[in-house]
Image (cartoon, rainbow, N blue to C red; front, side, top):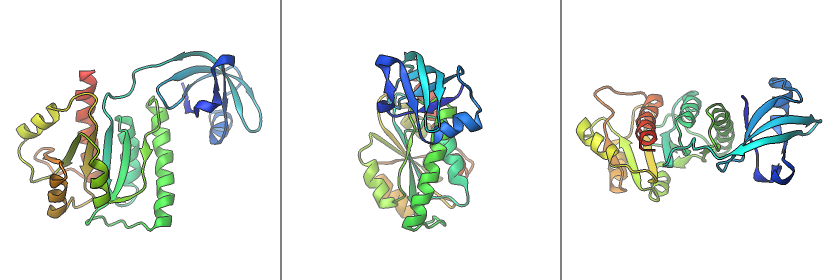
Length: 249
């Protein structure tokens, strides 16, 4: 069943109504070709969702009748921040889509020393808007209760500063110690702790960047004996954390 996100101001619980506006109107009417009487889900982006029936349509909005509301526990008990080194081509779009499916809280594109892609302010703004659209689509598809934010592009030093507020910081690195140490680090994470994951671009992080991250409190971890691509590494960590934290739930 289709899922959409609205602002709390669009929800009128006392009259059991939700008014959908903006681009979702076209998507419901012309892409999904939904009709009056059909049902869909709406999330308020804050943990509550509504099972609704289309009550009416006009040129600029769609009126929904709330059948019932619930507060399901779809989200992970931890907020996970993915600090992703800017990759080449369209790899960032895949990373964002899959990271949202795996439960990430926020995605922060990071310009590192080995990042081939360099974005000026105008290009970065356009890219971020596109990436946010992808995050929203992935959130709808995967039954997320809110749309994870894709932040503006940060420098590596800015990313470290932002991560300073987090409880746990991880940086996969090919020269990190063995799997036993990594299992111990991941196993020590508890529900409720905020987690930052630093992933390098193609070519990985330079040694000085890993050292700076370690000095900022990040724990180097290994992802095994194989070298993973930038679009695989973050998703591998997120998959392990999702399984571990869901299990703890």
